[in-house]
Length: 98
View 1: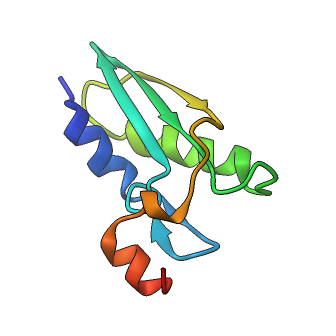
View 2: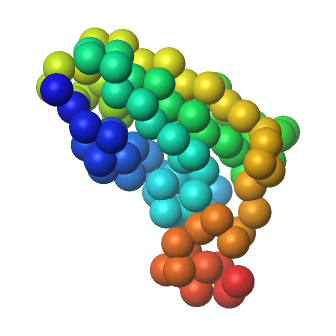
């Protein structure tokens, strides 16, 4: 069975094309819960009007579905707490000058 850490590692393959960093390092993934062969991911986007909203959700689903023993994924996009640069990794903050 996949672990929460496995899910996060899989999602790290999803790169935000606007900034060139993975969405885990950006702090956009709030949680991942493994329930047998199903995974629930809670995430946000940097802005509500993100033109890639649906594509980003699909990329997350596709990445997680590549894990062995994962047969279904639900991605819940939330807006609270609102994302800000302080949620990103130190590497991302440094690269973006924050």
